[in-house]
Image 1 (tube, helix red, strand yellow):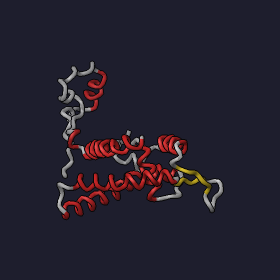
Image 2: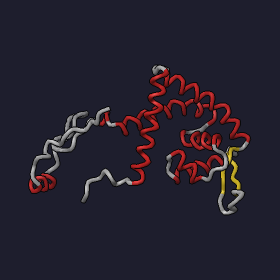
Image 3: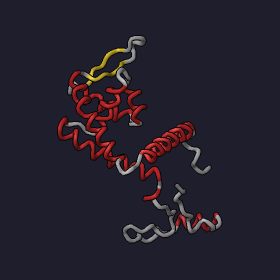
Image 4: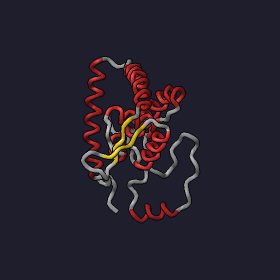
Length: 194
């Protein structure tokens, strides 16, 4: 996949004219769907992080409809239940790390699930100061009902791909995940120097 950026039309200006352009009156509003004149331009609909985010949101919202109607769970609740069903005994911070969700969002979600009786909190065997989370019996009942629905949804989502394409997609996602680890260790690496 080729990068999808395009050059700013003012990139060739010298620093003085760029500075004066920055203080000039704002450009006229562009017609809806058209890029603003005199500003950086990119093909957002071809920008991979945007595309992955939109696809992820669409997938999550579609499958969330099934468990929201039946169990009154939102996307964040299901993610926490899914992670703890697969990896019982994690702390809330570990759940946040596994889901790439905000720690505050996870904390609020855990509180709601504890209040509903779908989770139970205990202290870690080796470190009594650390609390760990597990699904309750009711939590596992929901988990056991939703997992087959989620797997069927995944099967339908991947149905346009043949076996080789599915394997290739898996390899590519693994490569992107590995590349992300390097970016997370240097989050400002792509920003221009001040």
